[in-house]
Image (tube, rainbow, N blue to C red):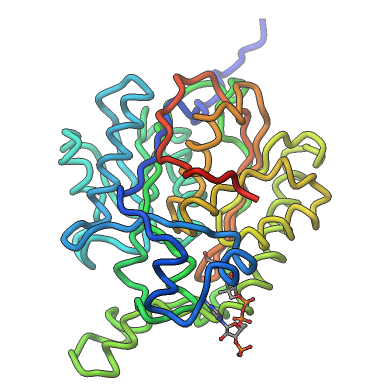
Length: 351
Ligand code: UT7
């Protein structure tokens, strides 16, 4: 009999949850303090509301809640590693993941942050999969969490309308590559030549905090919106095509395209570019805005809770963000207990 070596373990998704803070900010509320209006925001972005944390709350508060729910969804109370992916850590040092791990009763597990701005969840998924397939960890909790309300200038109308706060989490376990839920094919990329398109300029080692006025404005999030928009459409479509080619999938094999929820027009443009019917594009940006690294797991939690995504469905996840960074992943949705719906969608169906 030929000697067949056991195949290396694959990372299999085994738990999912999302969470947003209770406070809702509508477009009308923003229009009370900014020169904007509900019609402009809806037409340009598809967003009608977003959730924001209260003063005193931080990213780890959302990450802990999402992590707690995801562990419950997976039916486990221990993991070997906790990864938090965020652009809005509780503080520059130390990383947020050890705090999250300790508050979840997971002290002792490896814990570290991954930074890839809005692509963070896909990068985090690849990192978690690497820990599992290399045998370093048997089970990983991955949390995407962001509180952009803490870094966006509340008077910057272009950015204040887009972002919302939230967290989404998944549990991954060692399993087989042919199981539903196995995360296999990835495409990851970056181009730092465009580092200035999405940035918080000060507060790091290049522009250290000195407390003067210029520094204060440079500590806010800045984005060259229309240039980012063009890159987002091109790079997401390219990344999606690459991962489909690597995985041997055709566009018709994709039951649900789950993109980073940047802006509804961007999502639809990417779907159109790929030749994917728009109804196969999962979109919840209308209810939560752009939640950064949380956006893909929050969109998944929303669609799975509503049973739009069902076991056996084939998913294409694609993200894009500052860096520039981009990434995609293919997976078949596994059988999981239904997660609680992470938020009330409001009275109005998305348009
Ligand atoms: O998650 C990371 C990736 N980020 C994104 O994907 C965001 C990508 N970018 C976008 O979503 C869009 O660029 C925005 C929503 C940020 C802006 O939409 P746009 O259609 O690209 O507008 P624009 O920046 O080209 O600005 C058009 C006009 C400008 O006025 P003038 O110069 O033509 O008089 C802006 O000042 O719209 C103005 N404007 C607004 N007007 C009303 C910008 N923001 C607003 C606003 N309300 N909130």
